[in-house]
Length: 331
Length: 279
Image 1: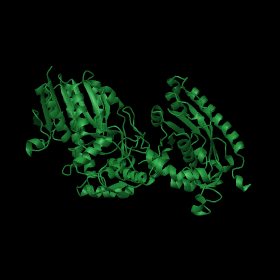
Image 2 (image 1 turned 180 degrees about the vertical axis):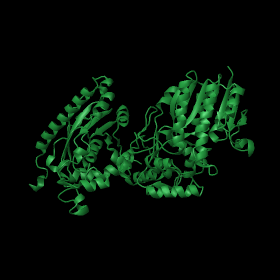
Image 3 (image 1 turned 90 degrees about the vertical axis):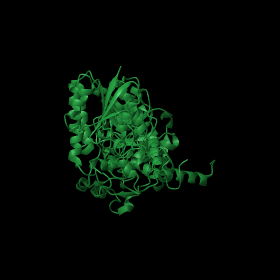
Image 4 (image 1 turned 90 degrees about the horizontal axis):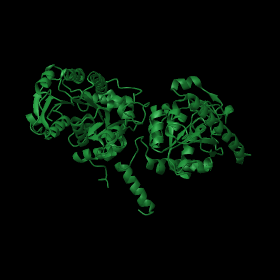
């Protein structure tokens, strides 16, 4: 059986890696990668090479995506194009439009398509929010007591709503919704990885949140399996275990600067204005209350466990950046 | 590292400094709890309150169980003493289910997680019991810990019985537990309700020494303590679905409450005067 796969968001690291893995799969006849900007491997060189992926520059917010899907007889759609932080030039409004309107356009096109059989959508564990009233470990079926009300997390909640709507209207299509923990690894560049490479790390005084990471290799493997096999449903994707923020800081050999939460918020706004790091209200909440998710459903469905635990994923990231604990390496 | 305390201390400090230790998914840091936090409590346990335990054999050596105890003393010192007792004398880490107020406060909430405790909610209780942990609850909550001295050793109402439902779902035994001595550490003879509301606290106590003596009034009185673990009440003969039968849950909750009240009355008689050397 021939497969034609559409991957959105191929100009970002994980999207590019997924496209290149799928392009290397002999069972897949064509991989079409779309994004709003060309991938770095095509323009500047460097970055992940896309293999035989055919790149098409499409703005997801426009109906052009429907033509791409119709023209190529796409049967599998891997939607990776969620922007987690507003870019300095275009801001939050454009980010929300890209995330929410872009997903609506894409799903609208899929609903019309007679060929699409499988849709895989990247979401985030941020949809659970982060609050002191949360259970310690989220399973997929839990409704958070305080859901997210801002930014990326809210976009993801809305995206998930549209995905569920699509799954209801097209029960013949296999829909997999993946809630990823924060990506960690040598190639990952996110507000969180940039945070850990600063010399001094501001933390919220009196709080030591539990954090969870997923290694990029595991994320790519999960996406590959979801794109090539039928695994309908919603799954958390994270490395086993948790790290406390204080533990991360020590492993990175950094100094922490505990600030009372109003000062942390002010500093966050200041560095965002200066364009150094992106902070948002839900990041403040994550830095205060933390979050952990259960990955039992994913492991049972795939019959596979992520190779990297949260701790191992973080250590691999530290190695790639040359970060070591104070006083030498760990035994 | 065989028994050399200096080398052990160095290795411990090195692990802590480099972040090379494990915490579980609830944030429980077993090493920090045992080596630092419980170490600070042990002198209080042995020399200040002279805690005696009875019937430790009712605590299972392994596997899930739910310890249900009375709650008193204005500040939840009884939780800490019960944790020392179970850790040191029964070899079990106690995982308490705490009020959400605790988890909203800086320092306290995260100290509580590091020492193994979590928010009192159905998901966390079920998860801990399924993992075979020893879970502790104080169903009286603030009603118990903040009650006036005149009502000492009278069990307050037991919430909605959520803990019983969790035990039934997990099929684990309920161990009714009585703690005597906690009632006398800060005898609450008055309350400042408007100031408490202003500060967002459930109550603000007046004791014979607080706020009169300022911070010195925060030193707990050295009452004699006893902790007795009652015979486990089995829940594994119920279907897990029985957790959704409110009548059954209420009845079992009442039963547990009565057993604890009886244990408490007997143990209080056995202990005698709260401050023996003063007699």
